[in-house]
Image: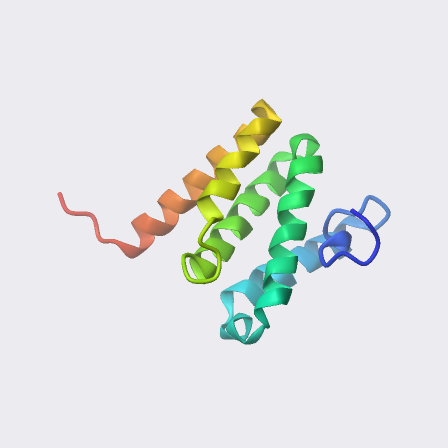
Length: 126
């Protein structure tokens, strides 16, 4: 990821693992907070685009825990911005399939996270 991109430190091999874990926690918590809504739309788009670009180029080789986190963060972005601010969210996530089986893994993890979110919000009728 080029220097200066919003997510550069999340997976930078030069940073210590605790630093990356902390950065992931901060981003995850921020997306879940009410403060996220105050972020200007161009900045939100920039962060989402940086995340998607990183996924396209690097996620295939990422360890499973990082793939799970990436899927969860994508779901949180979708929950916060779809459909009003990110109407193409699902199209963009599914377009990752063009990257082959390793990126299809991310899509499946994303869908599993969506399923878990829906099941946590919608009561089961049985």
